[in-house]
Amino acid sequence: MKMTFVALFHFIIWGGFSIVLLLSSRDKVHYKILLFFVFFYLAYVIAHIMLHSRKEAIFFTVTNSFLFFMSKLLFFS
Image 1 (cartoon, one colour):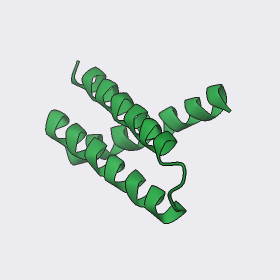
Image 2 (cartoon, rainbow, N blue to C red):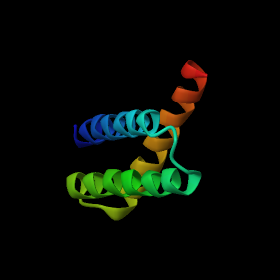
Image 3 (cartoon, rainbow, N blue to C red):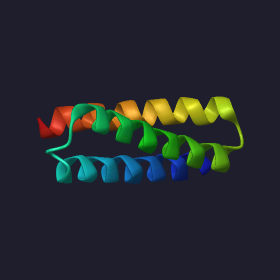
């Protein structure tokens, strides 16, 4: 049950990241990379708080991020 909530929060976070990138289309690339790391850290912190395990938090953050961006590439390109 916890993992489902973590996945839900991650997809909300990455959806927000996509909206922010859409709104900041004129920003330079290094600002977008910095923004990615801020959102990635936020997703990790939420996973770590909910799962109480660093390994699981890192694993779920990386896999959910990868799945979100792959689905974004497949469906919205």
